[in-house]
Length: 229
Image (cartoon, rainbow, N blue to C red; front, side, top):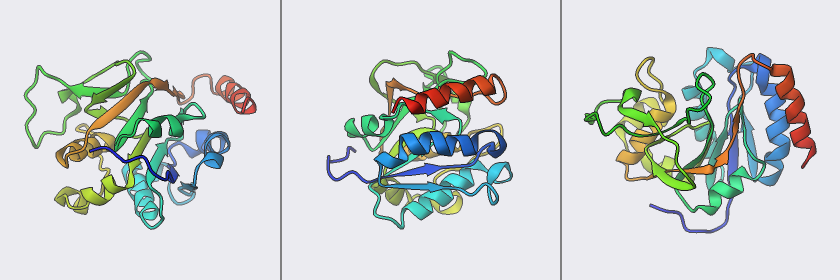
């Protein structure tokens, strides 16, 4: 399924991950870089959310809010992901239902957080384990099986259509189960079941900020980044 090129009204959604480190800075940086170029901007409130509320619940709540608007697409750019300033437009130009950019693991710096099916393992229909997938480094625009939600553009109708899936009604579009799968794995697998393809633009590379390492250097570099706009 692919979108028709029509009026583009993306809604930028931001969750709270580590509010005492990144949220305020990220709101300033990405908000300045991206929000003024799009139709709308929703952010979770640190006082209500933060680390005490799962990322999956935050994503689900934001999608519910978003479906009350006339947005054509939903964009997630997580608190620790710094994309190019034209990321949303570049993703949209590919004309896909579900697409993301690429960023790399904080623990394994050369490991892209994009995955394809592990052909050495037979995946059972009810299996959600991430070891059934292998990290994949592609080139340009490629179809994959899993992308990280932290830099993703999803057409509105995808979320609406997926409401017909029983699991979505029970858990929402994003659901996390410790040691089995993260919330974006869950979303991508159910989206594939609903007939959608998952795509990644490997030329669109975002910075994935570390938790504590080089924090002051990162903040300084990012201020230079925003001043170039």
